[in-house]
Image (cartoon, rainbow, N blue to C red; front, side):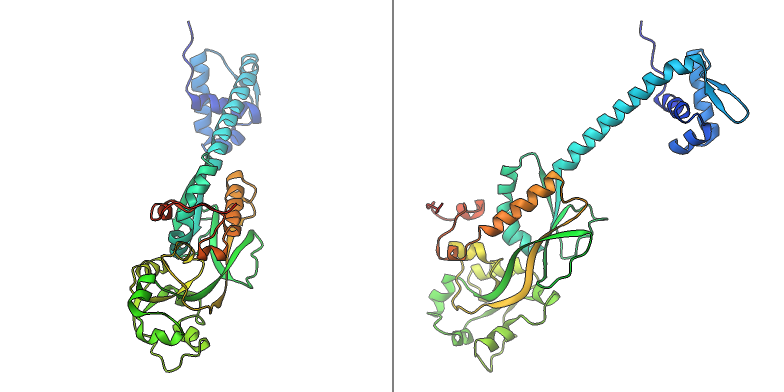
Length: 332
C-alpha cells in the first residue's frame, strides 16, 4: 500500500535546509522565516516518524534517515524545475508580441500577417497597435515595426534592420478621375477636394500639402480645405471611396495602388526622411520566434516592387485584396 506523500512545502523546506545545511539560508531562499521553516520540517519529521536533522547550537547535520531521503528529493525537485523550464521555453517561443503604428498595422502589416502565420503555425503573433513607442522592458513587446528618421542613432541595447523608406505623393481613386476628368497637371487639384492625414504632424513638420504644392509649382493655393483624419488608414479608406485626393505614404498606399483601387496621378514624390525598421532588443534577437518575424518582415519588404503598382508583382495578394478582384497570374 502506497504511503500518502507529505505536503510539498514541507518537502521543499527539508530539501533546501539539507542542501544548505543551514536553516537561515534555506529560509531566505524560500522567503519564509527560520521559525516557519523549522516548524515545517518538524511537522515532516512527525509525519515520517523519524528525525531528519541533528540540531546543534549553531549548526545542523543530516541524520541517517535524512541522508537517505535527501538525494531522491533533490533529484525530484531538479526534474520538476527542468519540466517547468521546458514548459516556459515552449510558451516563450510560441507567443510573439509585435508593436506597430495603427496606420502601418492596418495598411501593411495586417493584410500580410496571414503569410507569417501560415509559414510559422507554431507561433502565435499578437499585434499591439498604438501611436506610443513601445517599451521593450515594461510592455511585454518582443519586436516592433517603427517609423524612424533615416539618420537615427542606434540605441546600444537594440538591433535595427531597415525595411524601406517612405515617400509622399498625391493619390486618388479612379472614380474621382472619372468624375473630374484627367489629372494632366497639378493645377487640376484646384478643383479637387483634398484629404489630410493629420498623423503626419506628430513626427514631421516638413511634409504636407503646402510643401508638395510648392515643389509642384502650384502657387496661391488654399491647402487647408478638405477632410481631415487623425490616422493614415482612415484617410486612405476615404480616398479609395473617391472622397478626394490624399497626400499619402507610398508604403501605406501600396496595396491599393497595386490593385488599381488608387492611382498616382503625378510623378512627383517627396522623400519623407523616414525609414521603417524592424526593431528588437539584442537580448531577444536570437529567439526563434523573433528571428522568424524579422526574416519574414525583411522578405515582405524586399518583395515590394514599384512596377507592381502597374499590375505586376512577385507575391500573392493579401486575402482581403484577392477577394475583391479576379485571379491573375503572378510573375515568378
